[in-house]
Length: 124
Image 1 (cartoon, helix red, strand yellow):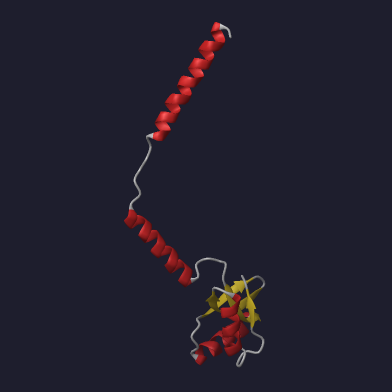
Image 2 (spheres, rainbow, N blue to C red; image 1 turned 120 degrees about the vertical axis):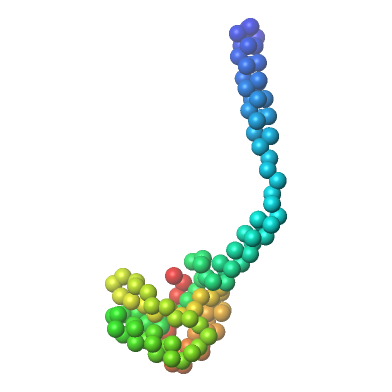
């Protein structure tokens, strides 16, 4: 090996060692309270349905006036699930509930289908 190659190799190794040392020194201890807050927030978001991997029941899809009537009729029944009027181009939809599994949605659908025969389970 020539003298120039040895110098280049030594220089590269020293840069590597310095960079490795700098990276290795950037350690921050993890705050357990912060992790607990993150877990609590995640659980709350799961329960509220903030994630889009949920099932819902669609009561109506069509014109705005009929959608509003359908939502009002559902709200008068005072069932356990909250209804929501949404715009899904080119029509309005009425959705009910946010369910973690298809089984939960199907159970609710059985109860809702007694009054709204056109209801169906969707995954938005």
